[in-house]
Image (tube, rainbow, N blue to C red; front, side, top):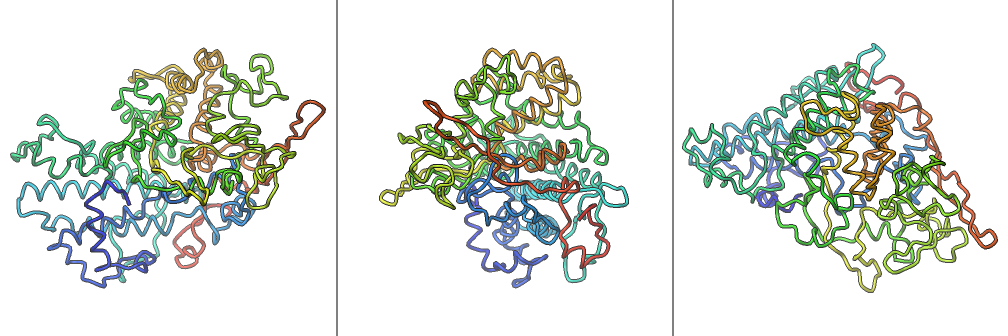
Length: 597
């Protein structure tokens, strides 16, 4: 749960009165208590909606941050029994789908629909104006949350069937009960996107852009006409409600969904264009003053300790659009620090990812003329994000030299101890705080949170869509282009004079390749690449490229770097799209399966 959502915490005390753990595993609410009790008990009614927050599809700050990243060419786990590892290495089937969103997303939608059907009749307050404000906001939250859940369903389960139609999932506008006909067809992807856009529009009309202290001019005219002033408006929509879904967050969700729909894997059947996606992203970015709003330290948001420690309930750093609550934890550090620092070294970045980081002058390492890459000193002169995100052989981390080479004598060394040592010659550094200490003598935790939506993701979404729609330097009605965004992001990373970007600015395809690589770097270990590769419908060779590492051995007075193959990637050509769960298609013959599954 989100700590800043104080009212939701109050609601949780009521949840045992009407729901249990088993309820979340059923397709509909179990009416252990009459649902119509919502009408007279606002806390009960809020509890129904609270379940949709409980089921948010994001990584909890209590857990390690990486899930599907280890099923891509970015990382491997030293725990080979992990379900994502099994999926990536040949065990992905329609009845064994670690990527499935079917159950939890539809559970959330069931709670949302139950709430929407009854909220108009709930006595939120005896003051009619306040009652209207609460009802509008709660309905806005519900519409926004339903759009979010639909987006995650489409990303995981949308695809082409054998009749040549691009399908989404069944649209569920109404709550289900024992008399519901569950054997229904999948709606088209286009209809699902229209449903998402409709929900987003409804949510944006009802929600404040942000939960804050509003001035009189901030109060929407419809409420002014009712005699509602800023003090009354803030009773319902003030800063104390920060952390709930807001109008700004819904705008971001709409931009995410639009980019998915406009991407090569879905564009032919979605009815959404890259121009649409660029315009939706720009709505969010314009609220940040465009390119000038890029946070100078945003690329290391997870490690900005003083910024994190200073966060108050409902507040966000400049880089973060939506986040979880702030908690005390050292789980990520215990799981991912190198063994000499009392960690388990679980997530190992690949050589594939390391090679994606350019030189400090911006040229890719494959450019032998301009890049000045020295294979005998592969980590010298590189983009500074490499050392911010990845521990390489010989790096000093927390005042400790980390030797990942094959010649190393500690458990930090390559394949030194199964289940703890690196398999690739690298350890993950991104997402970790350096001031934690998993040493059992100390067990020093620090404040951490999960970033649900980062502004950098939205900037990169705009760059991708604007380049595809209008080319590298054309922003149309917007004051910034794809080129402007990428220049600012690379400048933030220390690439000041950027001749490679200037080369790409004259070639749309080359710019597209650069934007995708910047997205890979900036969002690594944040669970984007698994779906990015699929929505881009990259060549199959990129999906099946083995995860690689490096074996470093002594050679005379120097070191020798030998690329090694660490883990296979076994994907078939139909796996650009995830399956409909096998048990659902067995129960309901109207559900068409995606091709290949």
